Image (cartoon, rainbow, N blue to C red; front, side, top):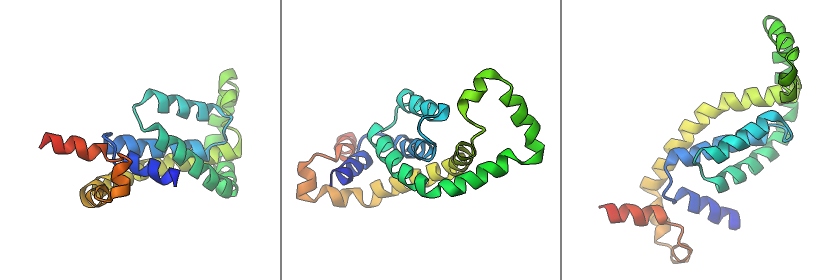
Length: 166
């Protein structure tokens, strides 16, 4: 129940839809990647630098981490295909010979596959979520605002702010 309250409060907060969408997308990237990895720390760093909804970031990274465990065999096959793709082998060899680039773990098939798939899904997911959040706020937000139990939890900061601007 607590997770549902966090999602509703994020959807009805005074943050812009792109901030919530970006939090979910960064959570997806973090959830798909193996955790102790350079790219994971880079995503966490970006999440704290950019003004996004941290609770949605944490919640979505947990959800996508569970999905990532299921998709690990797919990530492995995609990563193996990318790392053994003949036109790219000289690039991977060059990068492997750079001392600090080895720390990224790009030569791990699961890391490469999950990074590739999450970046491939990031842009469509961002725009789809952005439109869905805007539609939710236009069509359904006022319905949830009228439920007395939810109104008592003060989840609807967005609606209070927009009412004051009219």
